[in-house]
Image (cartoon, rainbow, N blue to C red):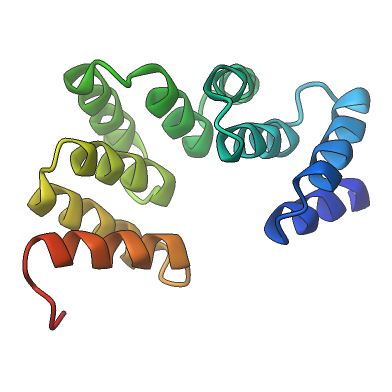
Amino acid sequence: MPQLDEAYDALLAGRLDDARRGYERVLKFDSRNVDALLGMATIASRQNAAEVAHSYYARAFEADPTNATAMAGLVEATSQGDSASAESELKSALAMQPDSAALLVALGNLFAREERWADAQEAYFRAHTVDSGNADIIINLAVSLDHLHQKQL
């Protein structure tokens, strides 16, 4: 779908207004398009609109309950105050989808917020083995290693 591709390219380029318009056009024709919903959630997250992001993640998860990115975003968006519950949900989801980089990053982020750096490093490393070309994962892995004083790695 060319509109979806154009919106995604705009998102990658940081042109959030163009990306939003593209995703909105896709959602006009298919209100349950998971990629467009996740794109809108990403835009909202980048603009620090947590409630809006949560809404889009919830819609994406409703459209596809097996989508790991939607699950990870939803758990992160809803569990800011309840780390134990979020950890449990993420680990349960990982039991079903152990090679999900999105879920592993969400788990790593949870551990990083709690300053559980060894656990964060392990989650980010597992995510890196799944998606070795993702710069965000590499940066998160490096930050966790830095906190563990493993600067050589």
